[in-house]
Image (cartoon, rainbow, N blue to C red):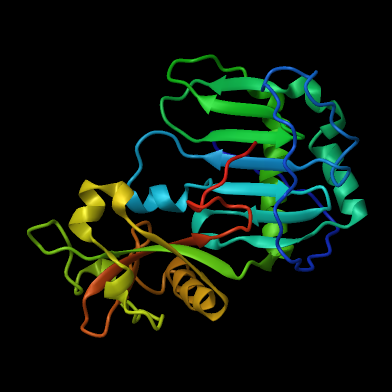
Length: 291
C-alpha cells in the first residue's frame, strides 16, 4: 500500500535536538479504543509513530535499506521528530513548534483516533504494509491477495502521514549517523560484475579509513546466506562521506539507477554499498518497530 501524497502547509522550526528514545506508550490491542485514551494531540504526553514496511521476499540490499520501513515518521511527547522519506535519503530530525503540532494533530485526526483504530486490508497480492500508532493504539493497512478493500476510511490519515513525511524531510536537520552494508563484488562464475560494467560507471573510491575488504561481506555469502551480511554504524565525518556518495548515486552521477551504490577499493575491485539513516531508538540489531 503506497502512501498517497497531499500538500500540508506546516509552520516548522527545524532545530536539531540531541537524540533520545521516544516514550514507550502502553500497547494497544489494535482493535479497541478502551486500552489507552489518546490525549488531545501531538506533544501532549504520547508518541506518534508511522512506518511503511515491505512484505514478501526482497533482495539482500533492499531488505536492509527497508528494514526500518521504506519511509517513517516518529514524533515524541516533547515534539521532537525523526523522519525518513525513502530508504536512501537518510533521516532528518527537528522539533515541531506548537502551532504546527496543533494543525498536524487535526490533519491526523488524533482527537478521533479511537474510532479509526483497527486492522484494514487492500486487495493486493504484493505491496507494502502501513503501521501507524498514537499512544500505542494501532492502525494497520496490509495487502491481502483477493482480500477485502476496506481501507478507504483511513486513507486521509495515510495521506496526511505521507505529506508530513515529505514536508519534514525538507525542514529537518540530517541525523549524523548512517548504517551500511558493503558487499564485495563476486567473480564471473559467481554471477558477479566486473568493475567495467555499467553498474560501476564513474564509481568513486571507498571513502573510509577502514579498508573496504575488512568490512565487506563476500558476494557469494550475501546471496546464499543473507542473514550473514554484516551491518556497520558510523557517525560524524564518516557518515557524511557515505551520504555524499549515496547522494551522487541518487542524482544519477554514478552507477545505474535502481541497482546499487558502487564503490571501488584502491586495487579497483568493486563493492556494492547499501546505506540508510540510523535513529537513536534502534535496538541492538539496528531495527525498530512501531509499538
